[in-house]
Image 1: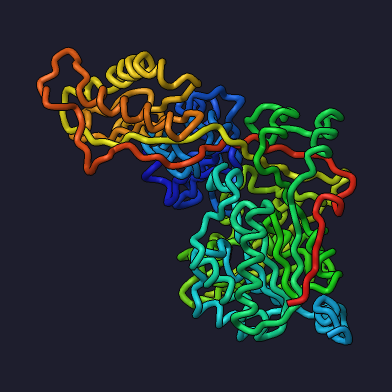
Image 2: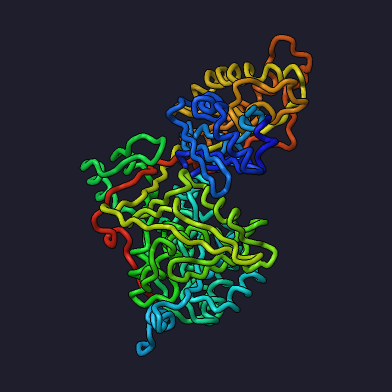
Length: 100
Length: 470
């Protein structure tokens, strides 16, 4: 199943200029649990999509909102020369096609 | 005026009750003052008789330009309008007004711009109050001493701070916590306008002074600082937080925006690297133990957050340094062969342009290409299949002078327009300009020179308070 069919929100945003975070808010508890246990969402699988090493990616489960947060290093500090997305609000694209 | 009780003492008397502390009502007028304050919700908030009103005005999100240049991010007219709304509102019910991170980035130029507007509004509206301003510019010598003592650490993926970075920064600020606001209120302020500040400090300073427990107070502050963003549907309307000892209630002043356990809990994810912890100068807020319950269809009650006082005070420091002057070349392309070859064409043209301008532009310059439709927003490993029918090309030049940047952009335009490549059929030109000139000079370009955390022993020394009577 594709992540986009399980989550009502898939968003990206800076958490400060050096960190990008991806929030996945799931439609239901079952989807959340399924995704949480999926190898496709582990740092080792996410990191290459963002051209990072696995140790630059952290996954945090957040049950109160049946959500998963993925925090990662930004390759370029927000707004510095060479950046493509100062707010980091459009960096979720690679997640949309992930198969869980 | 001298005989009058100062604002914070008046609040102390008001919340004192037989069995401890009465519920404290906190009105969040705006999460981004300067982009418009929805008036119906704000006026409803005033009718609820809040004990104080807060607004956040800043963020580091818009990038290094605003901090570095000293320019405010919001329009002047809209900012003056919003300041008028909240100043008039707070004075009409005679309660403190606290504004954090003046003018987006909160360095002295931003703070001075906002203070000038506040004085103007006060004069025009015949408002009289004690105004406190709190500066957040970090003393360069103190930061350099801290670097030498190993007391400055990177926040995330950024290099260690150097003394050269400190010197290069046009502005260097620190995020103040509740301590600075509390000093301003102790000095008798009715209105506090702060430079760079923690969003939470705007809302947690007064509860802390009045004796409310800091765990729930900080958690409430963290949620209300974005106004009604924590509701469904989320929005910018004013939000009322009611702090009742160990719990608080979240209540949007727009009846269509409902707070639910899910919507409020989800807000802890927003723009946070870690949804369970919020680091402040004076300690850490832990929300892993928080519980969210539905009070009625519109309101939510939250309990259980804990505050852990810091063993060592820390201040987040933010700096921006100028990297040069920026010019852009903007154009479209609809030729399938040019689009297919664009990733090879752009570096080839850059090489030609660097050779041709080497005699006229002596200083180094940076060139960045963006092909919107292919990789403008995200650096995709592979181009899309099929390729798009049209793309938008932006070539960004950062040079030492605006003239040099524009000169390079102009030469780039001409050679990209007429660049020959294998299989070219559209020999009239590779680009479509929606207008000319297609080169645009956008002004100075900045980088973040500091995003670090500094250990600090003397917080008051870093955030001086000034008082004036308006």
